[in-house]
Length: 43
Image (cartoon, rainbow, N blue to C red):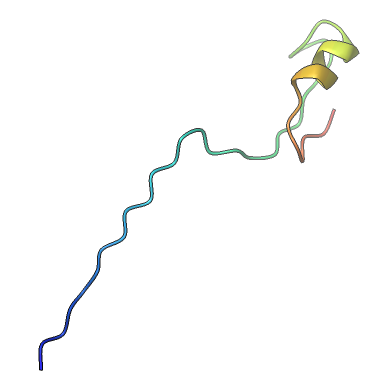
């Protein structure tokens, strides 16, 4: 009996991670930070 092995390749296109966004360091205005925030980000 032969054992078969499958290799899975995972390609990440823009892996998302939570970030802390500082205003005015990262964005000049709070609204710009809110508009560009991703799920999980802290502003």
